Length: 457
Image (cartoon, rainbow, N blue to C red; front, side, top):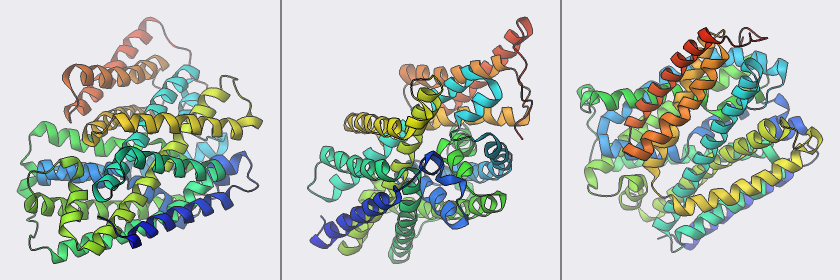
């Protein structure tokens, strides 16, 4: 259980980010509210990319996978290394065209290259993905607080959502970026705590290359593909690419944030192995939380709550803002329901609506690992399509449209019939490829209109 000091630290943290968010929101135009005026430099860009990626999906889900599969879970990070390298070269081209055409969201890429129908389909997936990660992070934060404190799971979800909503309404994307700087400090403190646990633990994790292949080949493929394709279809990462000032700052921030991300991932692997050995037979969902609670001294355990909570919040605010931007920019404005001059007000209204819905879903959905597999499958199947479009920008519109639809079908139907597991990743990729092939056949029978723009870079 937490003491008075721990509660004061949590309250102080939330007070600071509320003040930062409130001050940030003064005198902002559309560019500043949505994309920080496209002027982020290396430090801000590095911290916001890094902190947005270190949320519930990594801290809790990855540790849970290590708890379940041991060293085999490292295949996700092996895939991530290759995926981030590919994203660097891909991002350079996207940055160039985004600055010229004033992109704000990932679907803008589809609207520009493949037309309105593809853009609206990409919008549906973007909103679904981002909203899903919001719910996942709310669930993780609530489980964390309910594990350590007498505060109920339900009330914790409401607290997290309410505070995030307040500073997003005030400061927009600038508030996300500036609070991410604060939250990055917290993540590095978490890194220090993890190193302390590794050093002081009597159990030393045994690392053997042969253990990488101790899980079935299907799981290895699923973990690797998820890690590889997710960066290509992470809407929040695209938004940060748009917001970075120039190519030089883009290169630095991607390199540094990726390096920190990989280091934290490896340390989490070691932590997961220690917890797996020292505390068997606990829920994988909360293995990191329970591990810190039982293996760290009382004072440090309380500090870990504050830090993990801030990490979850830093991802939740990112995903909420990105989802709201896509609802407003990609749907309401492009369909004429709202006008550009009313965008800020409309986006704030959408934030409130999404937050209420997100809190409601978090009160219902409580399985972190299953939810992660579902949204990861949807994200990485879209990532596969984006890679195809990058390699072969002349791909016909029928293939793009049918592949996006297949992404949705390939996740929802197998999940409903067969249940959610790592195999869902393979189903999603298979359906995505099937959509591409069917589109080629359809285009041979009824050719699509040629694209006005022939390539993405």
